[in-house]
Amino acid sequence: MATTIDSGVLNALNSGAKGASGAALSAGQSDELRNNFMTMLVTQLQNQDPLSPMKNEEMTSQLAQINTVSGIEELNESLSAITDQIDAGQTLQATSLIGQGVLVPGNRVLLDKSDEGDVTTTPLGIELSAPADEVIVTVTNGSGEVINRYELGAQDAGVQSFNWDGQTSGGETAADGAYQFRVEATRDDKPVTVDALNYAVVNRVTPPTEGGEVQLDLGAVYGQVGLADIKQIL
Image (cartoon, rainbow, N blue to C red; front, side, top):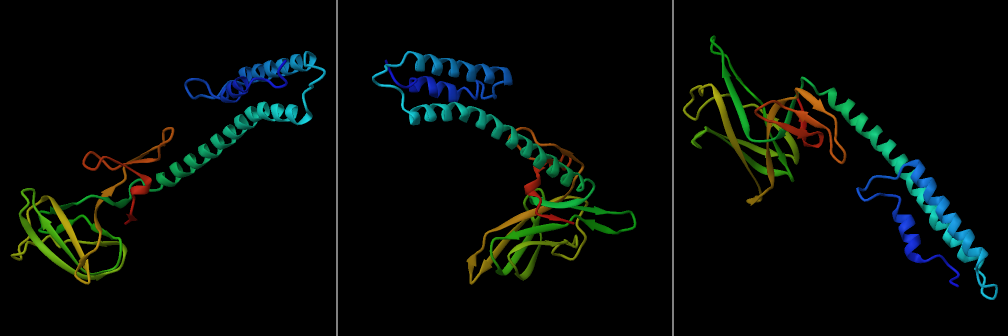
């Protein structure tokens, strides 16, 4: 008679910590699993070949394998609790952003002109992967026509924010509405990777779903972004 429980049985027991859907077994199922294993082990000991008895290390190994099931379940419970705490902390942190303006990846800039002639534009930003000798921002309209072009000079790596004065290249105030902008950056006449950032206001927060992250609602125009997409709080 074999001196160890078949490896396929042990593998089934250990993999049994999760069902077909990937969900953890219930406490009752887990207890039944361990009881069945112990019943098989005791039966094996009672019927083993006296000339070839199970060695202590073999028994210890098999007991350790079934105990792995309990250990995995306890570890999963601990990790789940930690994950819930992290998610709750991120959600709480994100709620502090409600009502605040932030810079997120995008290339939109809005211009509003009051009846009194005052001009307001939303901030725009850039994120440089490395320092640049020259940064150029070009504002265009919906048709792609250039409205104005600004040379910002040397800029450090990281996130920088700016404000468009709302002026066209001809010195006139541009019309109300939405515009786009593009950014070019160079260092020693070689391109530097740069991302455009636009302004948005955080309206509400959506807690993370399983395996996801906190989502910030920026309104119908900008949609939702993850907390990690916030590059700067204004």
